[in-house]
Image (cartoon, rainbow, N blue to C red; front, side, top):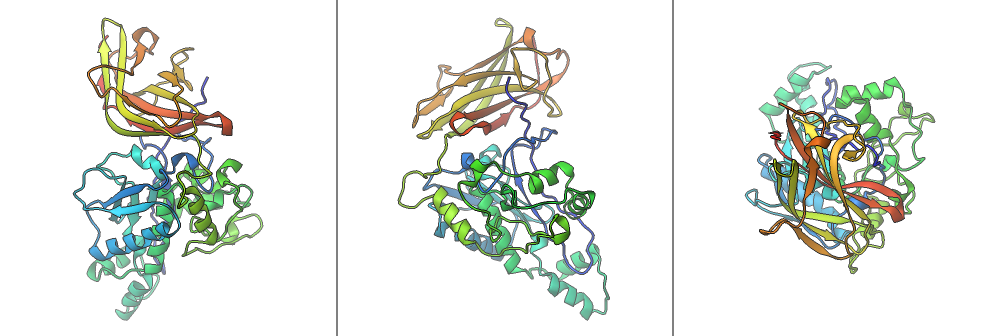
Length: 432
């Protein structure tokens, strides 16, 4: 039986009371979709997620969602392109009106700083951002505090006072912090993960005081703190690198957060380790990285057709998409699971139509290396998943969603259940 894998969107909505300065928003990476309320505690994390890097030499179309001044946009573009000096990847910024892009940026207050990890951006609809920058935390706190003092207002200052100052006199920015955050989030967009997850690097105090700190400053519950701060990588993800405390992908650390008093300030530039790793993942002058692993690329996903078939007595599920493999290949699973209308997987004890304890049907496939396959784009069906009514839990009178996912098992590297694509239907009723 496959392991139970539930994926959650981990967003970084930061909120805190303010005293002498604006709080700093920590980054949370987006992993999967928000709809499922259980946390995947098995996903390894580390320096990079090799399964979600883009093709070497990729030209990624990037656009801004509505919002953000011309000046802020120009600063984002300038700092994002720092990665192009070392990686064989191009960020091509296009007009806001372009319909199809790989990366979409939202500039605004209250979103937190976060980004999809590499090709996990494909899990997001074109109408949704893949990168968030919370402009509240780009504000020049010293400028606004000085403004309050000049008006005779004495500290401590509260959130509303500072927000009022920013509204009255906008566009005073901390460009150093903006640069750090933009390079950090675009590192995630290229597939890099948090450096503090390097195995054995940090001896964290997993105490209530640390959990409370992230709850008070970032609004994170225990699961999000574990995922974004404490979880460590498997050695595979380190790609043979050593721990890099100067990495742009590293959190700052206060000494009271660690057992041995280890502390680290923010990094504001790409480290030599960052440059070498991204050059190894996206090498210039080479077709493929030496760090490449088995991957499947799902593109042009046009629909997830679900038919309640009375004659066959079951659900007929027909996803339409293009699939491409690279030079290495593992085993691919196409999975269709049932979820209730609130987005929670429906549990089952069925021995056969079961994916990790949830009601599902799936196909196991082996594809040729360097191959391309188009599924269900012509009048002739060439892929379907079937779920018999009598193998389902009792769903009479209930609305459900069908959740389609593509998983990869890279047996050679002992990396299982790698989520490569994810899509879901709207709530629907089953008519038997």
